[in-house]
Amino acid sequence: MSERTEVLVIGGGVIGTSIAAQLAEAGVGTVLLDRGELGSGASGTTAGVVRTYFPDSALVGELAVRSLAAYHALAKRSGIDLGLDRVGFLVLFTDEHQVEDFQRERSGQHAAGVEVELVTAAEAARRNPLLDPNSIVAAAWSPEAYSCDPAAIVRAFAATAERAGAVLRTGTAVTAIDPDGLVHTSAGTIRADTIVCAAGPWADTVAALAGVDLPVTTYPVDLLLTDAPAAAGPAAIPMTLHPSSLRIRSWGDRILIGMGRPGPDETREAWRERVSRQLAATYPALAGQRIDHGWSGDLDVSPDGVPFIGRDPQRPFVYAAGFSGQGLCQAPAAGAIVRDLILGTEGNIDDRLGLQRIQPRLGVLR
Image (cartoon, rainbow, N blue to C red; front, side, top):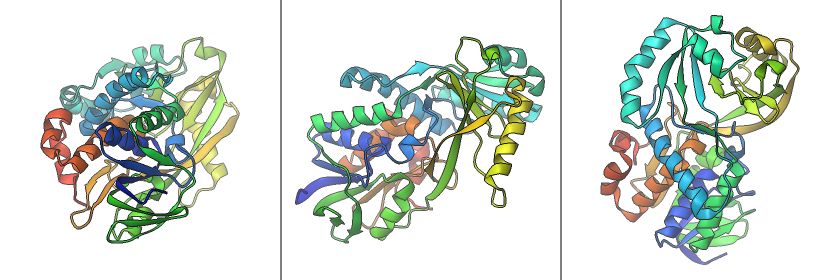
């Protein structure tokens, strides 16, 4: 363990490695610690899609647009195949109020650089042949959504960080943080001028070690798999989101399914049955299909779904957490924000990342 570093990043997922890479490339001495392996937390608990359209949040869409461009550049710069394959994103509308809401927010989405348009139920069914067009009234279609390999993205950021001089240590848990920046770990101590918390589902615990109250909670998720029927045809099924929160997409020769988690008084079996009923109602070709467990994990969630990115006003502690399952789509932009906060170049953030609308959240914990 080094005795000292300019910046210590805690968390080796997609957010932490993005931060480490961008700090190191800016010439900042950087050490990253992860309690497990790189990408073993929330970064591995995803549907493996980076997209730019986020209903009701043009701000997140703006970060995602910039992040998607950065991913294409990262693939070229690192020489690592990120598995980016365009699949598109369909958001289904089951009543006219949802259509009206979309139309009200569409100009804001376009201003943020998001490509999205309203399509008919028939057009939605053409793009997703499993869909019953009679179950919806219309849909939003955004072509800029890509399946990806989250593990490869973490590897690319990690390789970029190490190439620029950062030190990455896995299997190193943080056990205490002193007010003067001395960090105690399972492998010894290290003093940091600035500590960055990018610990995902453990962000609130890490922040508490530094005396910071970070209102991020842990949300467990389960992803399911079923066989793709012949009706799906050879084309990939785009990521498709139903108002019930049911989402599906092609996963190799199978279909990946997500729909939240069991309710407080709901058994896992009852939840699976509820998923099956909604699946059959929206996608008749999947009625009666056996549903298998895919994988489970935890996400770091903020109260309103917008991440906390900022700096504690009383200590050299920076945080980037609460991405609510959307960190993969925002990691490059989040890394740039944190880099600029540490370098003291916040004045450039508005011009470069268009983040004036997120300023109330920077440095302020609610």
